[in-house]
Image 1 (cartoon, chains in turn brown, yellow):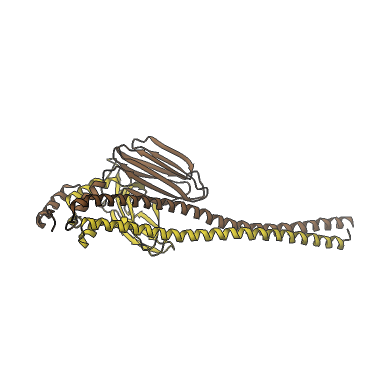
Image 2 (cartoon, chains in turn brown, yellow):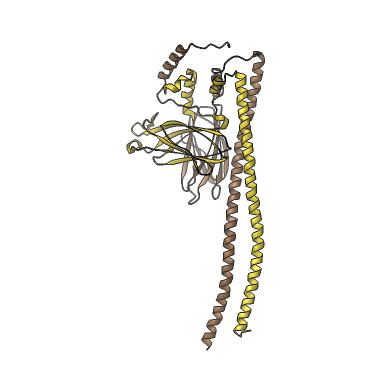
Length: 231
Length: 221
């Protein structure tokens, strides 16, 4: 067994009981992650807002892209906790914004009110930094592991490189999310091109045939009337 | 609530309590439905957590919890088939695993039956959706498989790499679909232009011949 101290079970339960009873009822049931991305559909003529609580001196990066829908553009608005407008963009197709945060709830809105018929599919990604939770997570993991690893001295180096690998893999994951959003948008553009080519080709064909027939019969009818009026 | 507390140390609970206020939230109306799209590869687990708060008109604050309020969660797979359709309480956690790659749609709406509760008209929903390896609960895996710290971290890295690889495979499949659509569009544009030219020429010839025979018949030419 390792050199970790495990409380005997009843004492641990008692500790849990006291701590839990002290906590507010309705305490959160989950720890939200630091980075999140969402894709949603914004109907025509509507506006949707999201809020992100932030602590002081953290960094909030928000990146959004319009993936589908007519002109592929949207209005974007970012406001600080006091209500001051930090970013206001109109009819943009994508955007990236980073802010140094103050304590409070940041609000960002996507506005599709300028569009009367087309709904937009919007992808946005929030990257939060300096939230002070990284160390907490590692501490929590320590509580669950069993046994020790040999070579305690080398362990620190190994852990450091593992952390570095983890950070780099997270970055790869982020880039993949971004590429996925770009690809989805390009694919949607192409599929709409495909539909448009089909539709307008058909219309073109019908119009050509109808127009040529009308031209011929109109000319014919002109001559027939004159003949009748002469006799 | 008590059962959930059993498996966690005090420190984690406190961390949760503080961190619980940190997630993204939005407001929805009474009958409003909010949908989110998750484009995921196949055999990927998705865990969603949400927490609701109701607007108290008198005190002008959001109440910490909403007893008696339920949220209906519906998940549809890329073909439109319903994968999950369940009612949860004011706080809930839903899970599903994708079996086909593509756009899965997660929709939430409240099922409030008591109009009085919604006098203010606003419900605050905190939402967090975890996909793939982010959905794994590492403390639980460590306890279950009895792993040392090094083993646990190696496991986490392996999961992360596996997820990236799955996403890359899915990306390859999507790119192929994209390429097929583009090539098909290009071909159609080409053939249509040729067909259009041929039709125009034929129509012109037909018009001239028909009119000529018409004029000859009417003894104008």
